[in-house]
Structure formats: C-alpha cells, structure tokens
Length: 509
Image (cartoon, rainbow, N blue to C red; front, side, top):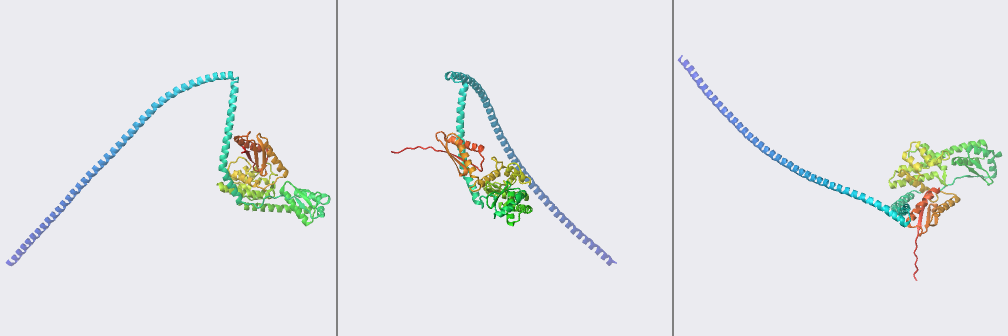
C-alpha cells in the first residue's frame, strides 16, 4: 500500500516536473519568436522609413528641377515677347513714318498737279499764239502744217516698220532655215519613191484595119454599144490601127480600155458580147481597186482603216493630177509626213494617216460638188475617224493651220508635188505662168529686171539701188508675194528674192 502510494506520488512529481519543463521550454520559444517578429517588424519599419526618405528626397529634387525648367521656359517666353514687342514698336514707327511721308508726298503731288495744270494752260495759250504767228508768217494754215507733219511722221514710221520687219525676217531665217532644211532633207533621203510620174492611157492599138471595121460594126452599132455599156466616148478617126478612149471618169475610161483590149483579143464583137465583156471588166476593175487600196495601205504602214475607206483610196490608182498618180502621191505624203513628224515630236500616226488620206476627196470630185479637201474630210468623218485626222485632211490646202500636224501634211504634200519630175503641165500653160509671174514683178516701181527660175518656184527680182533702199527691198518682196497670191493660181510655193546691188568702181592709173 505504501509502495503503491509512493509510486503514485512519484508519478505525480514526475508529471509535474515534466509539465513545468515543457511549459518553460514553450514559454522560451514563444518569447524567442516574439523577439524575432519584433526585430523583423522593426527592420521593415526602418526600411520603409528609409524608402520614404528616398522618395521624399526624389520628389524634392523633381520638384526643384521642374521649377527650374518652368522658370527657364517662362523667361524664354518673356524674352520672345519682348523681342516681338520691339519688332512691333519698330514696325509701328516705320508705318507712322511712311504715313507721314505719304502725306507730304500727297501734298507735294497736289501742288505739282496744280503747277502742271497751270503749265498746260499756259502752253495751250502759247501754242495758240505761236500757231497764229506761224500761220501769219508762213502763210500756211494750222491744218495744212499738221497734215505735213503727220505725213512725215507716217513716212518715218513706215521706214522703221520696214527696217524692223527686215531685221525680224533675217533673225528668223537664221534660226529656222537650217533646221527646216535638215528636217526636209532627212525626210526626203529616208524615203525614196520608185515612181516619178505616170500618164493616162487613152489610145488603143488595133492589129489591122479589118479589126477596126469589126470594132465599128454595121452603121457604127458596136461603137454605140461600147459607149452605152462603159459610159465613154470612143473616137475613131483617120489614125491607122488605133482608136481613142475619152472620158472624164478615169475608172470608166479604164473599164472601157480593158473591155476593148479583151474584145480585140477575143475577136467576137457584137452588142451582147460587148455588154458581157464590159460587165466583166467592171468587176475586174473593182477587184483591182480593192487590191490597190490594200497594197497602198500596207505600203504606207497605215492601220485601222475602214474597208470602205481602203476601197475609196484604191480608186485613186486611176486618178492623175498634172501627170502624177494620186495614189502614189498619197503614199509619198504619208511617209514624208511621218518622217517630219518624228523629227519635231509631232503626232506621227496622225501625220501618216492624214497624209495618206489627204487627197481621198479626189476620188469623188466629179460626183460630189465642192473642194476635194472638204469632200475628203466629210467622207472620213462618216466613218468616225480621229478628229485630228479629219482636221488635217480639211486644212491641207489652207494657209492657216489649227494644228502642227496640218502644217506638216501640207508641207509634205507640197514637197511631193513640187519635186522635179513629179508633175507636168502643158508647155503652153507652163510658159504662160512664168510670164505672168515676171510681169507681176515688173509692174512695181524700181524693178529693173526679173527672172522666174526653178520651174516657176523661184522669182529673182533685180532693183535699182538708187530708187530702192534695203528697207524698201524687204517691203517690195512682201508686196510682190501678196500680188502673186491674189492674182495667180499655181501649184506649190513661189519664193521671191529681191536683189539690190550697189557698185563703186575706181580705176588706178
């Protein structure tokens, strides 16, 4: 019993001691943890205080920097304002000074106006007085004296105008002549035509007099049948082994020529056969016309033409102007116009197409009334051609041109027509034209002699150097040109050259 009690007591004492020790350890650990937490908190507080001090210091520095920059900007703005104010004050001072000067000038001008008005009044009175004295002294009225002075002034003005006109012409010729020659020479050299001139065929050879009689027929019925079928005049005269075809329409004439050649070759000649052969010849000519138009279009490098226009151009194969084939002439103008346009930067396509079509109206001049240029322009306009091309066709014979392309095509037309061998006139008409040109020049005073050369394309006029001075020579050339233009009809251009020669001769003994 006592042992049990002792054991219980021992256990209790041991438990009490163990609890005390555990409580002490726990209390120690809690105190230690509190100390560590307190130290950490103090450390955080210290760090926060240090950071706040840094932030406060940075804020003070930023505030100071901002204030310094603001003060600098404010000072700069104040400086600019002071400068602007100084400029405004200076400008205001200048304006006020100018206003003052203007007021003074206005006053001075007003005084001068009054002075001038008084001078004019005095001058008018003096002029009237002097005019009266002059009239009394010279016995010439004021109006007569005025007319004399006006005449002298007019002569002086005409002299000055003539002089300036001559100088302007010389200057223009120096600048333009060489360039124009180079362009034209280059175009002509780059294009070489293989045909110069052709002549319309009118005479038909007959192999024998027997064939000629068969061609005439009984009582001339075959001749009447041919004329009725082809629309030509068939002339049978005393000429041996030949008949002559006459018709103003070149296509009908060619139909008749082909039909006659076929009839003579075949030998069967009677009205029914004549009608059949004539119809066949007409169809063959239509094919030839179409082929000629296509070949000419290809040779001219013209594109985009309506088939009807190509067919119209083919009709020109049988049309001649002064012995020159119009279709071949059109091909030449197309090439020359395109070459010159490429040299000066004009529209090459317009010049090529316009040059090719410029004489298309000649295919219908005997069917439609009016100038061939207007007829051609109206024809191509119906097929919605480029308006520039229509203008070129319409203006190619005008003296005033609305476009540079019109001028180029007109120049190419004249160049093709006027070159040696291109066209032929009758000898009588040729000689008469030259005489008329020379007579016009000889009708002017001071002209001693003149010569029409270069097939009438150049007129050289020799003048009396005593009666005609250099300035008057320039006016004389202009007057001769104007009279030629108003009095004569001529192809191409006529260049008038007035030559004034002065000679001083001394003899050494």
